[in-house]
Each structure stands twice: as C-alpha cells, then as structure tokens.
Amino acid sequence: MEPTTLEIEFLGTGTSTGVPMLRCHCPVCMSSDERDKRLRTSAIVRYQGARLLIDCGPDFRTQMLRASDDNLDAVLLTHIHYDHVAGLDDLRAYCFERPFPLYARADVIELLRKRIPYCFSSDPYPGVAQFETHIFGDEPFLVEGVKVTPIPVMHYKLSICGFRIGPLAYITDAKTISSDVIDSLKGVPLLVINSLRIGQHLSHMCLDETLDVIDQVKPGRAYLIHMSDRIGLHAESPKLLPPGVELAYDGLIVKA
Image (cartoon, rainbow, N blue to C red; front, side, top):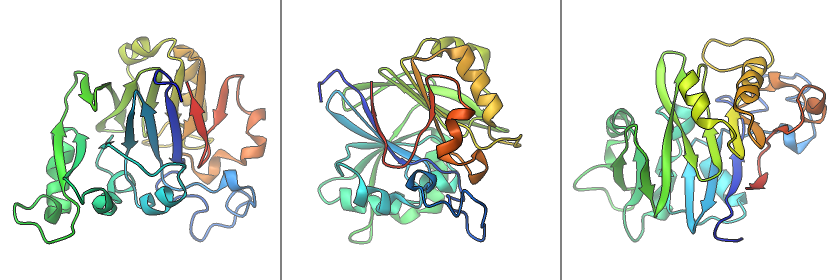
C-alpha cells in the first residue's frame, strides 16, 4: 500500500444487537449471505504508517482474529456506549510492552475509569489492559503523526464524535449533524456513515436521513455502517441506494 493511500477495514458494521439479532427469525437474520452477518461496528484505519482502531466493542476479539492484519497502534473512541467500548479489556494483548494509547473525550475517559477501574489503577493487577490516555476536544490532534479531526454529531441528546482522517470521514451513531459540519465535509473522497434501518428511530439516522446527508455532502463514495436487520438484505440494497453509495459489510477493505 502506498504511504499516501488510506485503507479502512470494516471489522463490524452492525448495530448494538448485532445481526442476526437474538430471537429474531426475519429474512435478514436467517440469511445465508455472509454480508448480512454483522458484528458490532468498529474499523481499522491504516494511513501514513499508522494503524488506528476506531471503537472497540464486545466483538473485538473475534474481529481481530479474522482481520487481515492484527497490528494496532492506538484506539480512537467515538463515545461511551457499551457496543463501542466493551472490548477494551481484550486490548491487554497489546499492552505487554507498554500501556496502549487511547484517545477519547474527557467525559468518555472519566466514565471508563468508573467502568473498568482496574485498567487505570496505579498498582494494576498483573496482565490487565493498561492505557496511555489522551484527551481530545474540538481541535485536530495527532496520533502516530497522523492528523485526526473530530467531527461533532448528536446521538439523540448525547454529543459524540466522528473522525476525519485524510480522505476519510467516519461517522457512527449520529441522529443529527449540523449544517456547519456538513459544509466542512463537502466533497470528502470517502464517507463512512451510520444508517440504522428503513424507518425512523429516536437516536439513529434512518436510511432516508442518511441519504439526505450524503446528498448534501456529495462525497466521492459513501459506505453505510451501524445497520440493523431492518436495513434489509444486502443483496437487495442496490435497489434502494443511489450510485456511489453502498452498504459496508464485515471484512470489507476499501482504499482511498
């Protein structure tokens, strides 16, 4: 891969329940198409020599066992919800030599210290995951020499963030995105953005809302993530999507 080429590997593209969802026997959950089987949303971004994990949910171990490359340099967290942070304990395999770099907003790190205090102890139990915490705010910051710009969005009433990394804009769990943010993203080469389902939802954009954002941003390409079974069958998705927009799927690798 050229040093100026960005690569994103989708480790998971599903919503908090995953797909198939427990106790659901709909056509999507019963599908034999591997693209319809979605672990919780997470991705690895490889750019300018850095390997950045975005979110670390409960399926992290399984995802890394099947990833094309299991090397990681840091983790970026979008927000505190369980399906985005529950796998942090499994990062212990990356902490043998030094604490693993973790980048998050101050409120996220404060809540993590309460949820998994043993990972932040000054006298840690041998073998636990340990983190080198880096707090970011609204301004761009560097991770392994790579510029990362937070993208503020609203997840219902919770302020969370996506990330702009080179030619990529990555947004998950958004319900509303301000016009200023949309203006800042116009023409981005690669947009990864959440779309929960067909039909309205309280805290996540539905397909129509996501497509409206995409129409305003006009990216080079767009891939949808954080999807439930109610997004429909992957094989039938081209009927619903305009040119240049696709459903991402677990294991997909895209370069920009």
